[in-house]
Structure formats: structure tokens, C-alpha cells
Length: 214
Image 1: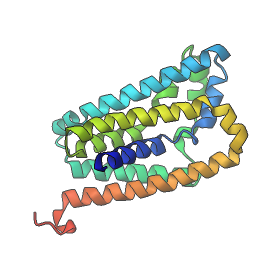
Image 2: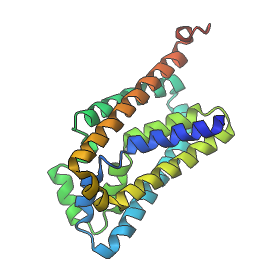
Image 3: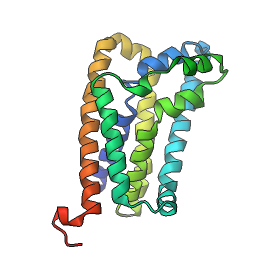
Image 4: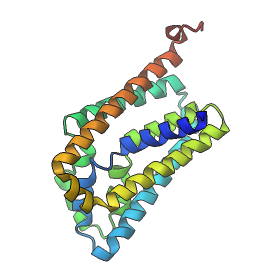
């Protein structure tokens, strides 16, 4: 039961941070330039690239932390603060990943294959996701939990992929206002997750705050 709850927490957290409903508009506008027969392949490639990137950072997170002498508490605090700023953007409808500047849009229009960049990285998988999976894997208490982090990545990316694959139907059903409401709800969840991450990081850095003698 404990492992099931851990898996659910990780998968839900990663899915909410990816926020496929919030990036749906930009994804649909990008693949509009792709031949209809190639759109499914483009989205599949983008999702695969996103999954592999998250796996690499989850695996390599410990090495990065050791090289730069980053403590788990510092990682949690930094990731939490970053996610909190991201949640503010989601709550107020100014999510940076949901927009491309003119230069990026021109570059995307000129590229033959947009699957890996900018679609997979950074639109589907951005810094928030990377920081989150690094923190989740670093704080996993045992090998089984670390395996579940990778399962959670797979579940979250697959669920996001299914949302994006059904983008046109979802847009027709929910409308743009419905997507905005969904993005704000996800922003609230991200804010709560970010706050808890910062609290856990402070407990790690200052055990006395948690009532534990250092």
C-alpha cells in the first residue's frame, strides 16, 4: 500500500507539472505545420524524447549532486521555489512554456522535424519536471521506490501523450476557457507540492525544525 501511494504521488506530481492541458494550444499550433499522417509519429517521438530526458536526469541526479556537493535539502528547496514560481504563472495564465517567442516560432516553422525540439524539450519536459524527478529519485528511501520513480515517469509521460494525441477532441469538448480552468487547478496543485518540497528541504537542512536533534 505504501509503495502504491508513493507511485500515485510521483506519477500525479509529474503529470501535473507537465500540464498537458496548459501546453495543448501551443502543441496543436506547432503540429498544424506537420503533415496529418505524420502528426502521431511526431507526438510519439516528442514523448519518447521527454521520457528519456527525465530518466537520464533521474539516474544522473545523484552524480550531479555529488559533483557539485549539493545536499538533498538544497535540491528540494531550489526545486520547490522554482515550481512555486511556475505555479504562479499557471494560476495567472502566463505560463512561459505555453508560449513561444517570435524567434522560436520562426525556427520551429523552418525545421523539418520539431519532435525533439522544441516539442519534446522544453515544451513537454521543462526544467520543473527535471528538478522534480531528480528530487524524487534522490529522496527515494529504497531501491523499490527508485524503480517506482521511473514507472511514475512512464505513466505521467504516457498520460500526457494521450492527452496531446486527443488534443483536438479535448479542445472541442472543454473549449479554451475549460483548458484555462484546468491549468489553474493544476497550478494550485503545483503550488501545494512546491510548498511541501520547500518544507521538506528546510527539515533536511535544519533538522531542529522537524524536532530532530542534529
